Image (tube, rainbow, N blue to C red; front, side, top):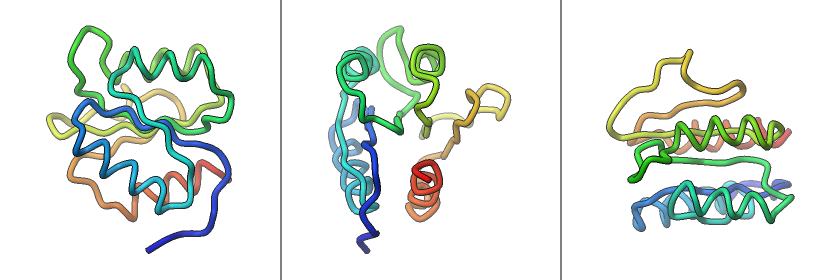
Length: 123
């Protein structure tokens, strides 16, 4: 179900191509523009060049030493206004480990709850 047009862009950071495509579709159906990154390093390069990103939707389980939790901490330090949606299929993140103004969803997540979080962040 398409939602009303939203302002701002969501950066989707997911190393699994099929998962990334599904999340990109969800973001676009929620009325947002979407940009994709295949890992945390790619996400930082994008964030350094784009000023329109309001939300980062990141899987925390990415290969390499720069995972989604480190990416979230970096975003909170370098780009404090950006909102964070974190997800994982492998582990639950305790609330105290989630950066300020971030939310966490365990995969498989309920799409309506993720959309509600994005829309709430866009207000």
